[in-house]
Length: 247
Image (cartoon, rainbow, N blue to C red; front, side):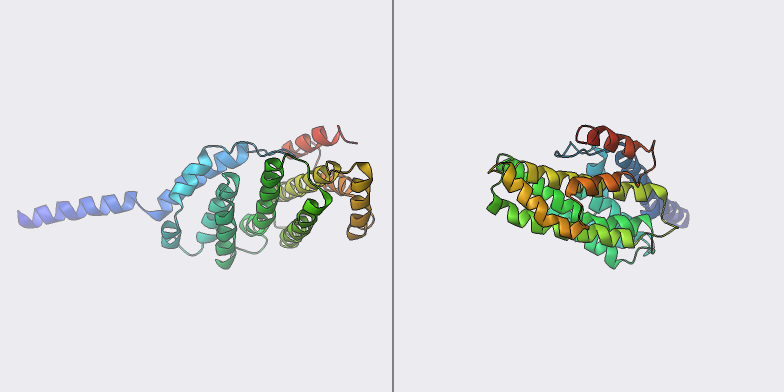
C-alpha cells in the first residue's frame, strides 16, 4: 500500500509539472501576444491605448520564466516582452529587454532580430511624444535641438533593423518596419512644423536636415517609405489615409 501511495503522489507531481511546462506556457503567451499585436495599430502624433493582452504577456514573461526556456525560445520571449513593455509605457524596461533579446542570439534576419533591433527607435519616439505633450505640444528651437539628435539616433536603429533583413525575412515584418519608420518621420515633421517662432524657424530646420536625407525633407522621406509597402496592406491603408491629408 505505501508503495502504491508513493506512486500516486509521484504521478500527481509529474502532472502538475507538465501543466507548468515552460513550453506549454510559452505557447499560450504567444497566442496572447499575437492577438494583441495584430490588433494594435498606432497612428502619427499620438499614443493609443495598448491592447490588454500585452499586460498579460508581461506578467507571464518574467526574467526568471524566460531563463527557464530552451535557449532557442528566449529571443522570441524577449521580443514579446520588449514590444509589450514599449506599448504599455514601460520604456526603460523595453530597452533593457531589447538588449537581452539581442544578446540571446535571435536567428539572423528573423522577425525576432528585426523587432528587437527596432525597439530602441520606438522607445525614443514614445519618449519624445510624451515629453512634447507635457510641454504643451509647442517647442522652442532650443527645446527642439535634443529632439533632433534623438530622432537621428532612432533612425540609426531603424537602419540597423533594415540591414538585418534579407529575402528570408517575412513580408509582414518588412511592412511593420516601414510603417514605424514612416510614423517616426511623420512625427518628427510634426515637431518641426509646430515649433515656436513661425514658419521661418521650421523652414530653417528643414533646410538643415535635407543634406542628411539626400536632399529630401522629412515628409518626402515618409512618403518614400510609405511606397515600399504593398498597396492593400492594412498598414499601407493607414499610411495612405494620413498622408493624403498632407500631400
